Amino acid sequence: MDTADFLLPRSRYRGQVKPQNLVFNANLQEFAQRVSYITCLETNGKLSPEESYEQIKRLWKELKQSHKQLAIGKSLFEDDDSST
Image: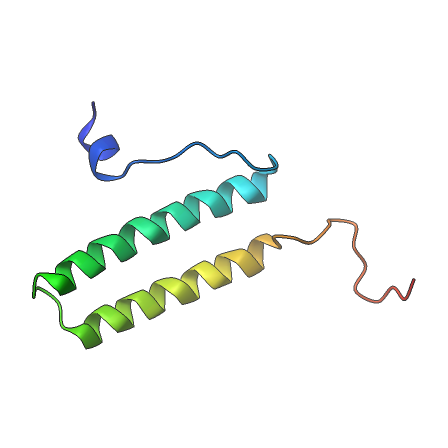
């Protein structure tokens, strides 16, 4: 087993296979892993609650931006101006 596999385990993706879904899934798993590390560091007194909050808030904004940029849930052929 590789050290990276041990420290950063990844689960298989089981949803609808589209490139943007796979990328977002990887981003979501990384977000969850990093939040887990931050909460452990805060629980053990290595980070202050304020610093932990700020780091998680920054990670959340990055995840939201990723979601928006990948246009998750939107059809590639969807027209924003259509009134059908």
